[in-house]
Length: 573
Image (tube, rainbow, N blue to C red):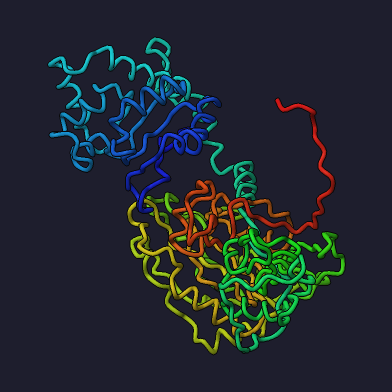
């Protein structure tokens, strides 16, 4: 395996590819180094350096990072390769070398511990290095160190031919290489890919199906001003009626939230009026402290989604969640499904960049194999229901147009009628495949075409299962909170086996086990405050920033109940 990209590649200052990272020593040690150290400890044989700058220094020429840290402290002994043309970039891009020759000297002669330059179409690296060696600028002992690492890796892979005296004529690949090539696309590989695709699926939301078209009603006002403290402790009788004040029922709260009134949960608790001096903006789980309309609604929704009553007990009489779907032919309630969205009938959009080509592919025949249906094909293969399909909108089909909006392909009337005729709508949203600079965005918002598609479908009043297959957290601008969007599944980029895996998840053929490795933002500024940010970094005066779903979030179909905690040992190891 090759671990990459060392180090800090995932922390660009502006979110764009190749942008430099500024990392404190604590961030580097606590967040970015542990995965690389784990790979080194597991015996990884090769590594690729990152093609950006860390704290103003290009990684490719950093003796501190590539020699002192990676080699000496972390103990990496394998082959270290550059990212594409990164030695030359010391002159062409980073502008820290006065010439290509000086770039080679900085990268190799400067004790950076590099072994290989990844530019198969250009021999200038080896030509310049030979010239530097001839005039004594690069010591031969330094070249021997890298040459030995290259040979050791080839030997370990079985790529070195036998000595001339015993070489068969004609020479054939080693037995290990033959076995490796023959295993590509095997049944065991396919089974592993399918299992990996299943593991990517995260159930972000699952609520009871909506009942009927959305009702238009006035929104109750919310004031950020604190309410007067009650005359007795507690602040509320637990029903939403503060002493001496008007009742604020959960129904009103649901109406407010459902009509896009904004969040008042743990991410915006400043909206919850405190009831006792000194208690600030914190509201207790049972609503007895700082109870407000929105807090009560959010807590009620939280309990409902988990089957937990107000007293903490599991409610076996709760309404069934939308997922998993049960076809009517199997005794369930779903007889007709509308499948829509630009990623619903595409393997390429489930797979992203570096699939068949640098920028991926939207030509499914290039990556289709046995057992790799699209989500639409997988749902159509299910007995016991009817599946209708309308694309809804169409993406351009090229990574170089990732900023383009999804163009509507069906009339609004056609889409609403198809949604109204279905028992459930499955809307699969995504992006065209992309990687590196062509995939850079100026706005994290999912394009307006796809967001408008969901809003249009919601107007039919039927339950919607939203399936997200974006390789990054795109801003959804509230469509995930629409009353008709009762379920949200997310799997980033599950690959060609993702269609089958997502269909399996929708049908409950396995238990979704994914957990978010990030906090899904509701605004671009939220990305500046990752889940591990210091308490002194605050958003709008609060220690928490707007997120749709927090780091580590992930639901399941099982009903869980926590009991008394037990320690496995009386002492920590």
